[in-house]
Amino acid sequence: MMELTDKVALVTGASSGIGAATAKKLAAHGVKVGLAARRLDRLQALAQEIEAAGGAAIALHMDVTDQASVSAGVATLHATYGRIDIAFNNAGLMPISDIASLKLEEWHRMVDVNIKGLLNTVAAVLPIMRAQNAGHMINTSSIAGRKTFPGLGVYCATKHAVAAFSDILRMEVAPKYNIRVTSLQPGAVESELFEHITDAGYRAQMEQLKKQMTFLKPGDIADAILYALQAPDHVDVAELFVMPTAQPW
Figure 1 (cartoon, rainbow, N blue to C red):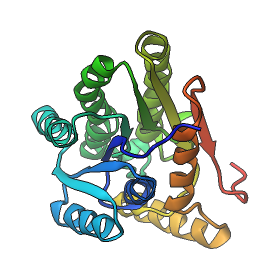
Figure 2 (cartoon, helix red, strand yellow):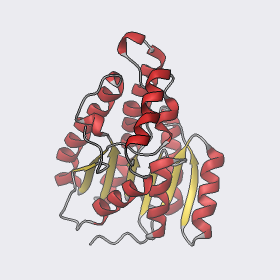
Figure 3 (cartoon, rainbow, N blue to C red):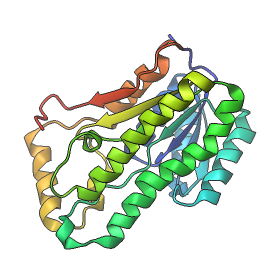
Figure 4 (tube, one colour):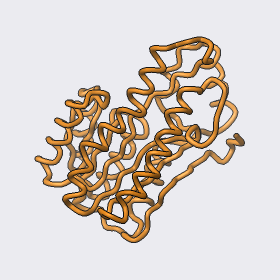
């Protein structure tokens, strides 16, 4: 089993949900965590919580859509702890609407955060991991990265892009630089994603879904990530498809 004590992790989208839960789980296993998101107050509170529990964390004010912001955050984390072993590229948005609604601004925002944000982070971290000849990148795709659903036209497109990019990244960097890559593909998870939905019909539909089945908790995803990270060095868990037991689609 891969030992995580004193490893250093960057977690984007760390201010809530899966990102926050994973950051806490990593810190509890001895990982020094760089908490990256736009909501600095939340990050600082989370860093204090982690440190109060005996862990190590720093808050990094980062907008993944801004290349300079990402580069600065990654540089700060690297300067603070001397290395970056894990990058959890988790920032994402999921506003749902029919394509015919033409919510162009939401489409562009999803592309900016879900795809370009991930590319910015990978580009900032990869040179560090290459120099170390070691690292592990975990990229949050989705069930929407392998299946398609009405109302999720652009979201599915972005998450299919994450899945494809992650697999090719793994092919290119795993054998050459000893950098493992995992494409994380959760089903329905309790998170703030639904709060981004401006379409009233789809918002109501998502709320109804919560009554029909038990969603995954962010901690469930953190546990799955821990499994991938702790796999022996010669094992790359290339995909993690994690579903609620009651989710049929």
